Image 1 (cartoon, one colour):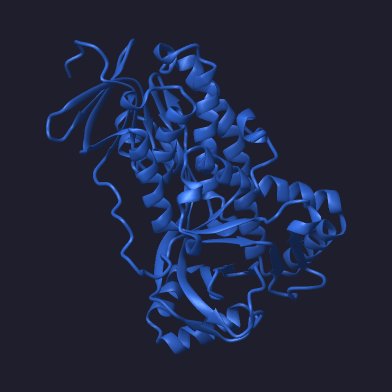
Image 2: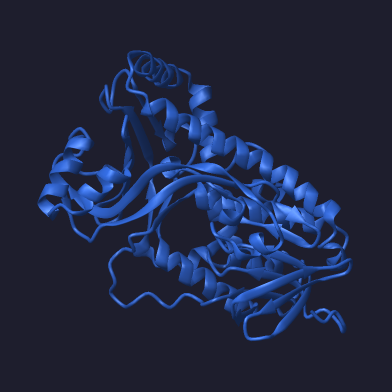
Length: 412
């Protein structure tokens, strides 16, 4: 690729998902780059949600830290009020117990001095409003497919399938689990498949969800109910792939009965109100988060089990951490320096590995059906339930307010 002439941009971001466009907007709103110096490259950009559409089957449980980031980008207040729901409690319990009593654990925002435990947000609305915020800020949006990447001492060049070449000081890959950029720069991944699918749908339940996220751990995988503002719940049900095929083939009534049984009838009878979708589950992490002039964000760097709904929140914290590192780099000409990107890598790999290990460990512990595993689960949940400061610590981390949090997120 040609390497002559001035750089086109300070930062090019590949991937127009939530993480990619939020990263672009943060660079502008935090005054790390002028809007015309930040570009987002993607195969395609999201379209506006259809008028009158139901809740998207993709919903996200967003933390307080994610809320703060989205406010900084001008996204939060533009989200449709009927596609954002604040939940106040979370109850988790082992299949051998009940939602209250031994083997259960409830977090309540009233006990930790917070107005809520987070928000359930419509995925399609969130994607669209993030993109609209980037447009309003003047971020350059470029439609095209990445074909080659070449990093040099002073810049990184990106070639698109149609022959266009773009040059910048830094290239950020936010292009998802199967990241093309990650592959092109030779970063390997590790991890393992869970050999499970997560089934997602919206259901109506016989009992009110009480502004509570409910999650029952079965040996076959967890089933979660995320509360929506119209009284329904969005479910995420993780099961073995063979069982997922059986469930997908069921009639709506039979599926509702199976879901009711899996939830231990905690919310009464369950009835499907939407179609059913599914996606495979895996643990995947990039061996490196950075190369000279190239850095990975979000799912391009790490994919975790959805049982705690932390995937997108971790990706948005990646953006915040990178912003802080770049802010301390001494100017845009230094953004691609490997010493700065290595600092980001050490920071976020440490935090993300801790989260991934915790989620993987929980999945393995709750998958055990033997008496010892059952006893450990009951004892562990009961112990946490009885220790207020420990419960508060778990809740604060889930809110993105504990751990090694970027400084500018701590005071807003």
